[in-house]
Image 1 (cartoon, helix red, strand yellow):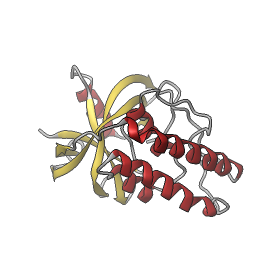
Image 2: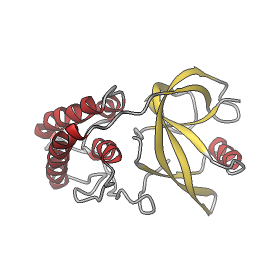
Image 3: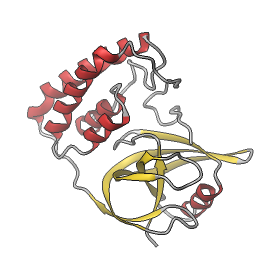
Image 4: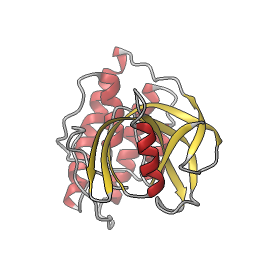
Length: 218
């Protein structure tokens, strides 16, 4: 049967909340199937070309599993909240009917060592500073004072998630083979993005790391 997949125009990181409003029929069908499972999960991949609605999109082959935690019915749609879990790579895409599905292979979790603590602190300091500057030039998805996990591995992924970067840079972070590589790349890409902060930015929303208050859109 394969793993249920939700291609999005955004990157989902491990240990990071995801909020969606689902209104497209195929994803309502998928949600109904997930709600029959004891531990409902679906895969999230970034759309490489195309749009989130209507199908026919091209997708990246690396993604993150999302564990469903809240479902709120609304008029003609469903609002859900999920949380990023383990990374995976696509082995093979299956038929999209009745909703996107794929065979996936789980990727190993990154390993944390206490020797990385100074690099974690540096990455957080730089990301929060640049995120604060980004807020001066327009709406940002994350509040620069967002509260993060106390657990260092989760915190590292969340720092990568809130960095004010484009989707391709975020995909580079998601591909990181080591925790040290993730933190160093987060620092380097965030500093490289800082001079571009004055460029026009698309409309966005401010959300917080608390999954009950996070907000995104299908």
